[in-house]
Amino acid sequence: AQKVTQAQTEISVVEKEDVTLDCVYETRDTTYYLFWYKQPPSGELVFLIRRNSFDEQNEISGRYSWNFQKSTSSFNFTITASQVVDSAVYFCALSGNNQGGKLIFGQGTELSVKP
Amino acid sequence: GAGVSQTPSNKVTEKGKYVELRCDPISGHTALYWYRQSLGQGPEFLIYFQGTGAADDSGLPNDRFFAVRPEGSVSTLKIQRTERGDSAVYLCASSLNGGRETQYFGPGTRLLVL
Image (spheres, each protein chain N blue to C red):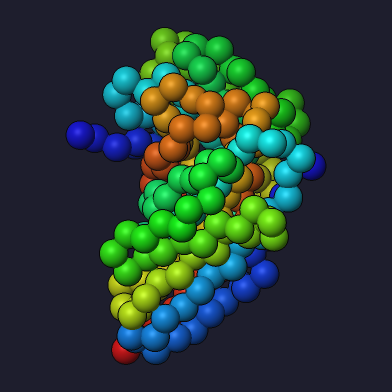
């Protein structure tokens, strides 16, 4: 079975703090993809990153960085120097090998960045 | 270019009624997905179209739910005999060729069944 767990339901930080959102996944597939999406209060899911299971290099995009650790089945997301505009619900998702691309989402982590 | 669009943005109906939700994917995207998101939860997969055909409908909860994509572009999700438990946000996404390519989501239709 495929599963994504985001254990942190809510996180609250003060602006300029760094924050890490955890994502742990389960799959028996040898090839899979992992995703992060942002869902601001407006409701639309915004794509942030897609990573395949063969690429364990960490990725950095501006204030965002992702740490993929296959050994612990984790794909954590860090926001450096958080800003109020980062306030949103963040979802981690998994797409396995034989599913036609359907995404299995975690429960989401609601991030609140206070000024 | 235009993103995924969904209409209506909000729909209120009464228990037992029939509803149709529409999704217009990104132009040229062959794959189209429907998800359902309940309050405080992550989206849950309903159905996936590759072109005109439903390639995977394993997420449809029961036979009251049906979706079509007759010309391989716009899709309609149809719910018969709605129940209060059907209240949720229905999200549509599209990707260029399906598989594990990035899916781009629409704004969703918020369905409320009274």
